[in-house]
Structures are given as C-alpha cells and as structure tokens.
Length: 196
Image (cartoon, rainbow, N blue to C red; front, top):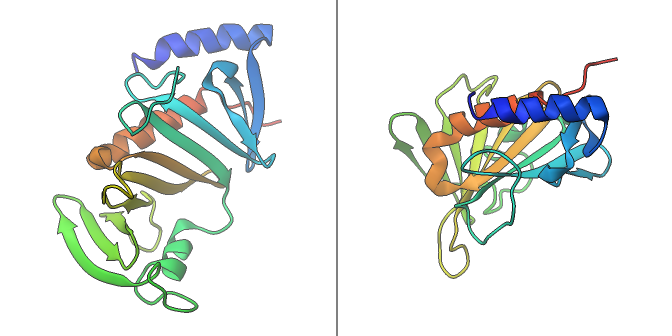
C-alpha cells in the first residue's frame, strides 16, 4: 500500500485539474487513468495497459521478456470463468477434442496448484479453490521451449464486477499470482470513476 500512496496523491490532484488523463470503459466500469500508463481502449469496451513490475507505476520502455512488466487487459465478462473452463479445458470440453482442449498429464505443484498439461504448448494451472465458482480464476501458461517460447508467460484470468481480467506476467512469478492480482485491482480501483 505504501507504494500506491504517491500514485494516489498525484492521481487525485490530476483528476481535479482534468489534465493528462484518459477516460476508458471496460464492461460496466469506467476509469480515469493517467496517460503515463499508455492505456489503450480496445474496441471501446476493453482496456489494455502495462505496468512496471518493480513498482506498478507506468512502464517507461518495454523490454523483451517478463522481468520488467505486467500486462493488464480488462474486458466485459461474456461468461463466468468456471463456464469457460468447463467448455474449453476440463477434460470433457465441448466441441471437437483438439490438442488445445486435450489434457495429456495432470500433476501438482505444492502447496496450491493443479497443473493440466494440454496437448498444445501450454498448461492450465488451477489454484486450490471451489471449482464451481473459480473465484481465484485460472492461469494459462506457455511452456518454455526455446527457440519457440524462450520467455514463458502466464495469464491469470478471473472475473470481477462484471469484467474479465487477464493479467500476463512471467511464468517465473507463478507463485506471486495472488499478490499481482491484489496490486492490479487496487491500482485500477484507484482510477475507478464513481457510478452515475
């Protein structure tokens, strides 16, 4: 929380003046985000931004790999994440069984993850949680296979306030997914506009 206080102070001052901010909408929620974050309003109802991994401030310059940034995409929630998991990756998916949907091996990463190695080049990683609601979300992670995927990444998908959040970061930070989720939601909540 200490890191966010200077950002909040600058944000509150800037919001009053109206300068240097982008108004963006993601699902039912609108945000007023400092332009320094380089936020883009994808298709008018989704937002994308990159933050600096060390301090969660604006990313100065993106470098190859995942050592410097976390990407955040917020879209309208079209279906609950539990439904998406059931349709795509639960071992009895809907539609044709492709390598994308086929579980080849399941194993544990203690203390909290079940890993489903899919037939393609990624894994579905499920934190221990109620599988009916999937309140923590799921992770879709590439496998590091140089030269194809030299920098393996993970995307945490979760639902919040009628939105689908997709946070992407390096697979080496898998165990920090909860911290990253908390920091991202706290940061974006600080830019959230009051409902009218």
